[in-house]
Image 1 (cartoon, rainbow, N blue to C red):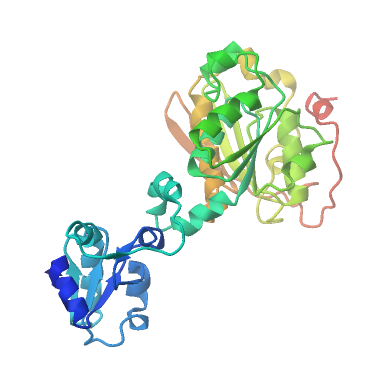
Image 2: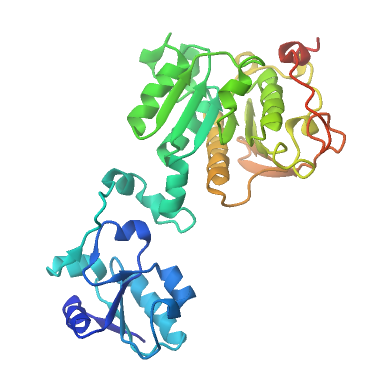
Length: 376
């Protein structure tokens, strides 16, 4: 078992030539380290200790925030043959509390970044590098209603740097039962303006661009060309087919969501970047159902929390795509039954004869999607 030494003893040994290693993550060390320590994350140190410790007989003291991680790292180093390893009790917190000197970075620390995203920064899969990737990312959310509201809320909270919201509608009182970006005072206001107000209040670091336009063939490429991910929150067939075709043509991942009464669906269509390996929306639905078979929410109603669940799942998929973590829903359709509180999954294969996403299929251009979905 490694020794557990006090900050005072560690300071004395440091003066005698022992090596002090701060095993916290980069973003933690940016806020200050015990003076004289070198910074190496625990994972890096355990993976290649000889890069930082000249030999197994060198005296090494490990320090973290409060002592837990440094003790675990010390135990691992002992297992690897390093005999003179100890952990500083109480970590940097106790070191600082007992008045021992700290070294501060020369660059200005972004305190808001560290505080706002603290829980992300503690995840090794994200960390400071991943959070900076989110800040540099651009997401287009089509629809600022039932699906777009929760999706945009969570993306803004997570720190996605650029959010473009596309919707030409205004807030109606009947929206408030499920479209949580808006409040009663917003009735009659453009949805994208109302959304911008809420999202900017939640996270002023995020640049929210409201676009009060109806999405169509004439503007779709202009609106999504610079996006890293596109979220379909329109929940209507013309928008679904249009976004599918445009995202294939522009090689953009599309996060799909749909709700109906008490049930919802989520998937990722990434055929533009994975031709022949991932399906597109047309592989699932080559043609839309007749209008009478697919009534909208205003005609049949929808459980108010259902778009919240589906929109949250869309935001989750978008974050995974931006961070390059986990397994996206590409090639899988997730079904949610709110009444039964059940999820089930359907595997989707690309259609080798799909006119849009087959490997050698040329882009056929845009069509009249409203007429196509109306059976015209």
